[in-house]
Each structure stands twice: as C-alpha cells, then as structure tokens.
Length: 453
Image (cartoon, rainbow, N blue to C red; front, top):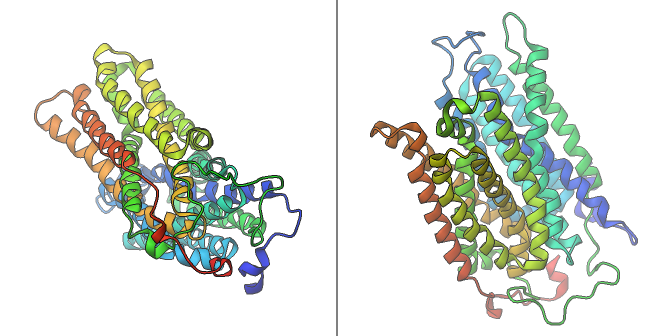
C-alpha cells in the first residue's frame, strides 16, 4: 500500500489525458464539501435524549455550533501546517490521509453521539474531520495547477466547485439516513454518521486511485509559455518559507479574508435574514429554497469566475468582486425598504457567486505571484484567512443584529448596519488588492530545476 501511495507511483505516463485528473479532485471536494450541510444535524442533535423535543440533558444549539466552527478553524490550520508535507508526498498519499481523517471523524463523532459526550464530537468531526478538510482541500488544487499551466483558473474552479456543491448532495442524504435509522428510542443520527463516514471514505478513495502528477518538465501539447508574461505573472518560483515573509502574501491574506468574511456571515444567516426582512411574505419553505439557490450560485460562481480570471487576470477579477460587492451590499437595505424580494435575491445570488469565485480564483492568483513549486503549501498557509473569516463573519452578522434588536430596532431593519460594515470590509480588500505588485526577483528560488521537485 505504501508504494502505491508514493509520489513516484503517481507520475503519469506519456500520453496521459490530463482531463482524467479533475474528476479525481472533484471526488474529494464533493465529499469534504459536506461540511456546508452540517447544520442539517443541529436540531436532531438537540433531541438525542428527548427524541421529539429537547430534554434538559440534551445539548443546545450554542454548544453544537462550535462543531462547525472547530472544523473550519482546523481546516485552515491543518492546511497551513501540512501544506509542505502535501507537496512533498504527492496528491495520492495526501488524499488517502484526508479520507482517513474525514471518514474517521464521522466515526469518532458517532461514538460521541452514542455515548452523549460532546467533547468526542468536537474531537471527531471538529478536529479529526477538520484535518481531513484542510489536507483534502489543498492536495487536488496543487495538482491541477501543475496539469493546467495554460488555464489555471479553470482547473482550480473545476475542483473547488465540488466543495461548494457538496452540501447539495449531503443535505438530502443526511435527512434520508436519519429517517432510515430512526426508531422510537433514536432519531437516527448515530446510524447516519456511521454510514456517511464509510460512504465518504470510499468516494474519496476513487480520487486517491485516479490521482496523477505530470512528469518533470511536462507541458500541454502545443502550448508555449508566453514570452512576455502578463503583469503579476511570474516565471520564477518562490519557496513557501520565503513566500509568507513577503508583503504580497499578507496582502492576498487580507484579500481572501475580507471576501470570505463578507460572504460567510450571510451564508450562515440567509434563511432567517430573508424571513425577518420580508416577514410573512416569505415562508420557511421559501427561505429554504433561497438557501438552496445561494448554494447553486456559490458552486457555479467557483467555476465561472475562476475561468473568467484566465482572461481578465486574477487581480482584475478581484477588483470586480470588491467593487460590485460594495454596490450590492449597499443596495440590500434598500431592497428591504421598497419590499423587493426579487431584487434582494438577485443581489445575494451574485454576492454568493463571488464568494465562491474568490475561493476558486485565489490558488491561480498564488500561482501567478509565487510560481508552481510550492503553490499547495502557500495556499495552505493562506487558508488561515478562511479560519479567521469563519469566526469574524458570523460574529459580525449575529452579534450586530442582536445589538440592534436589543436597542429597539425592528427585525426587518436589524441587518442594515451589518450590510454597510460589509461594504467597509470589501473596501479594505479592494485596497489590499490594489496594492498588489510582482514579487521581487531576490525572493525567487535559485537552485537547479531538479531541486524543485
């Protein structure tokens, strides 16, 4: 097994079709994208003892909310810590490790639910599963960038689209499995966790088997690197330990953090937001449909915007995200005042497409600025911006809303201040992106090409 997983055994033979690699990446990202649907377990987990309603000994939503937060926090930290290891061992061993961690996280979590020990859920799905998320997220992306030097945006968009769409599979599957395992003494969460852990491990192993890396010096047939590269696109390589000492890395950290903070807070509060802003005109079922629509735009935006960035350039694409995002967030309070549900939905559909597009475009942005040698490791360290945003975004939306309501502001108007704060965050991101310039050549890796592997 160890030899099968070694990087040397994943080097593609001559004539290998590079379009066989994106499905491998998609198998991993569709699996770990389940994390966006974890909220389907929240209410059932508050009724493990009471079954039909919460008992005094049951967990509450505030305690359970930490499971998702821990998973996202560990995603960023593990991607940063294990990024260099992922580059060194290759995608197959990295994806296999991610499958063990993510599938195993469900099984440890199931044990925690069975024994009613919340710390085991934090440890299992949160910490162990979060490691699977981080390692599984960066390993296919790094590989695809090397396979598609001619279309790096499109390539990363193909993989990261799966992460955005994973919830569309996971949410109905979670409900189906809980209903299947439901009895008079159990609401079926334990059985659902066990089965999903096994299913996701098997599905991710498809990606493990199919993963390949190009041979040293490989280029697409007929493709010639442009003699005069675009502005901000380097022909050199920057070592990961050097990259994160450059101002460019931290400017991109701010760019990603601001874009994600603005989107993720809304994503977690979308259903109550539309109901509170438009009252009885929006039913809970319609609000659920709105959340589903946002998921589609989140997923589609990852492929659309990342592909567009191959033509616009990465810096210009983010300029669009920030300027258009500021205009749309500023428009949201007005949609509530004039009672236009359709305009509200359209604004957030575009906002969420750019939220997903930001995730899919940033690996190609890193490749442009720092080269391909350690792009996976650099991407891993940059994802700590996602960890920060995963805490900052929901806190801003939820706490400012509550502060407004406690101050006597009607619920329908309680999001207005938050939307303007989001505009401010996007302005910070815009200025960081505006300040981006090429990395100085003194930071480029100097050793022979053989040392780059």
